[in-house]
Image (cartoon, rainbow, N blue to C red; front, side, top):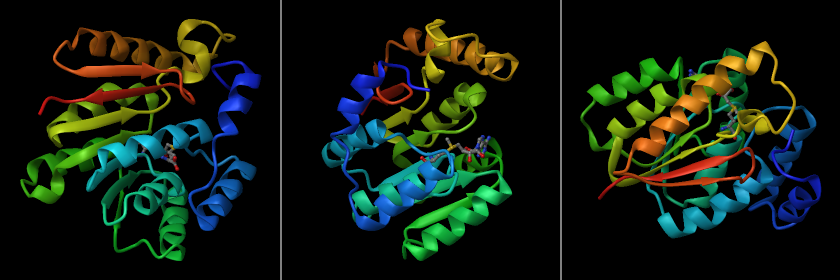
Length: 220
Ligand SMILES: C[S@@+](CC[C@H](N)C(=O)[O-])C[C@H]1O[C@@H](n2cnc3c(N)ncnc32)[C@H](O)[C@@H]1O
């Protein structure tokens, strides 16, 4: 479900084009099989952002089949990507997709719950465990926990991007009642947004791009 008018989404999507044939096929496969992945609008936004920011060390929370991890690795030549997935079947697909695109030397796929893995990365003081871009795209009710850990794992001046911030429009009540399954996510996401609003030390853009993106720049 889109958070904006369908005609507007179609217009925005017309700006999307796959950055490679392989990624185009990968996206079509995920879209046809209802595998979660970044929306076309979100990818179009990231194309420009990544060209400006040129991150070298990227952390992603929420791999699914590995589409966005492969997208980051393909777009940011030479960058290293660490990505975390807790669902075994998603992890297995991601392993094979990353391998079939020949990206396994640049994508470090970690299996397990993100908070535990993030805590062990925080303890690891090596420069490899500090990131200049962190992309949060996992369980929406845990964004605050992911964000707190992401901040600790950031290099000075890093950017943290959170996807699905507006949760299909449920957050504003502009779409129908989310049902019990989403209620906790909506409540916690509202709390997270209030928290971000209070963080005057950060530069934050909340965008109605895709399912809602927060682009958060930390201080240098
Ligand atoms: C929206 S999908 C990620 C899509 C992916 N970033 C892409 O665009 O190709 C979210 C994924 O996060 C995983 N996930 C959710 N909560 C998690 C957690 N606490 N730790 C690790 N993975 C988690 C889910 O299993 C799911 O595969």
